[in-house]
Image 1 (cartoon, one colour):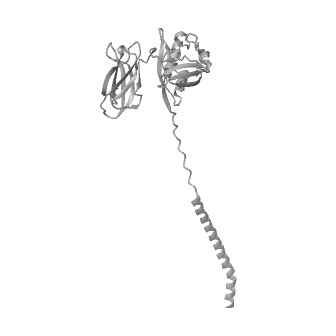
Image 2 (tube, rainbow, N blue to C red; image 1 turned 90 degrees about the vertical axis):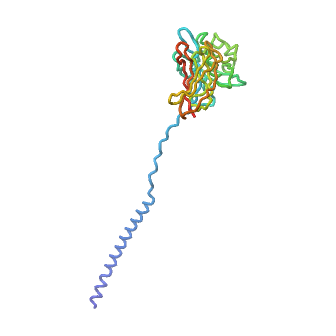
Image 3 (cartoon, rainbow, N blue to C red; image 1 turned 135 degrees about the vertical axis):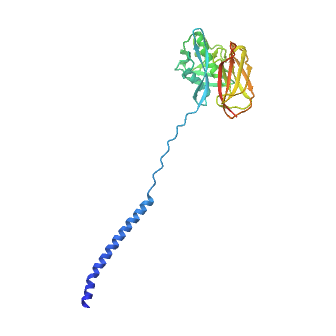
Amino acid sequence: MSNYKSCSKRNEPVGKARWAASLRIGLVLLLVLLLAAVAGCFKQSPAPQAQPQEPVPPETMDVAVYYVKSTDDNMFLVREVHQVPKSEGVAAAALNELINGTPQTSGAFKVLPADTRVLGIKIEQGVATIDFSPEVLHANVGASGEALGISSIVNTLTEFPTIEEVQFTVEGQVDKAIDWWGHVGLHDQPFKRDLNSVYEPIIWVTAPTPGQSVNSPIKIKGTAMVFEATVSYRLKDASGNVLAEGYTTASTGAPERGDFAAELVFTPGQPGSGQLEVFEVSMKDGSDINKVIIPVELP
């Protein structure tokens, strides 16, 4: 019996040490597992990738500008429609395009010097006063070109319904500009709109505008320089079917330019794209000549 008790006491510290070591290992493993779990809970998902945005095209607007064109036997004005950045100052935008734009018509050119600046525009009771920098006086195109150069400015500005007449100053003074380009002075200003020297295009349409949604009756407006002042028109659907057609008479015939206005009644067909054609009928063979095509949206 005495031998047994002695052996038990001798083995007791060894058992306790082993138990304590196992406990410590267990606690360490448990702590590792807990830390791993906590790390997993706080692990952040990758941030979503920002999708590249499509660039937004700048807004534009159409302006009509008049350039001078010279041929072997004549000099006249041409009317062009240009797209420019959208602006509240539409008159200034049109003038700047007249100065800085590029003519689209073969043989057409700009009269105003490239370094000309528009210092101000004042519109009162239908009269627009344009204040130019002194560079405007450096144009050199001869007497005929000077008269047309003035008309190019006046016609460009009188495209806007709020402007009926135009007059010029240089650095705020009329005296600096009175002789203008040497041959044609400003003694008779303000100037009025005059389209009789506009030979191209033969026909242009101001209503409806391209891409416009139209309903019956379509209101058609424009100007023309055509034989016996007769202007024809027809409306087609996307398949080329003629929905309606007719003709009207301009206020005057060639060689002068006249305004025209008409209404075209039609029966709606398949909704979608269509086109309005405005043209002159050839007296020689009855074909369409000087045709203008305006894309429209049909109901």
